Length: 154
Image (tube, rainbow, N blue to C red; front, side, top):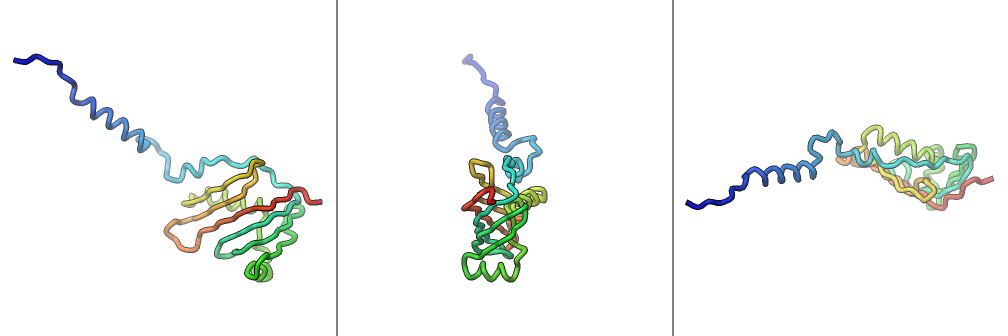
């Protein structure tokens, strides 16, 4: 008879369960969209007056626009290309302030959109906002790129 040291057979199973549980967030109540929902919110405060360039790809608003904001409202929106010039004429109220874009982002997050992401500049203002309410739906995506920001126009 050979005497030897016996190893418990359950140890590899315990390790495997622990690894799988950690990899899949076992016992966690987090949903798949929680990473985006926990994305840091901006500390940027929208000034009353500023200018910026908006490049938008949405069903309603597509093109590049030079936007002036005074007293928190869009006072001028100029289309940079033929399509955006036409859209400004046909839909003058559709060009948003940066604050309006941030409200769209927060609304998408609160409605559990499949995508509600933003990239921010060093000062906290958004430079890119990407929205998609339903990844399986067509034409509900929106991408807003914010550039040429000039704060506090007099």
